[in-house]
Image (cartoon, rainbow, N blue to C red; front, side, top):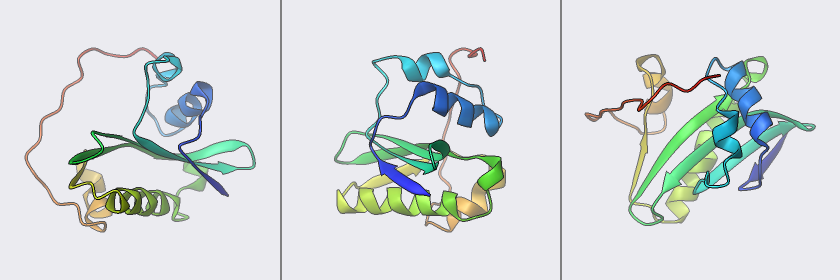
Length: 131
């Protein structure tokens, strides 16, 4: 497996990975030239994208981890844990004050292992994305 840091990832590869984990594809959004991230890590097996993690940040006080995905065929091998560790390490090196992540209740134990704790939060989808 090869980890690539902040290198371009094709919109189709991201859409395929999103679909494999049961999410909407959002291929059009990932292809939009305005779409960027603060820092992201992609994991490949040969040339196939099998894992990905993305973040948004102001670069000083806050960072938000989003879109942690591992292909179902590769889950249970520590890839998601490794992606989280690498992302958190990066933010600590950059002295980012606060790291946030939004997750479903069933993933609480996973994120707690990294030191995340519950805070009140709200989230809404502004409109439904088509596949």
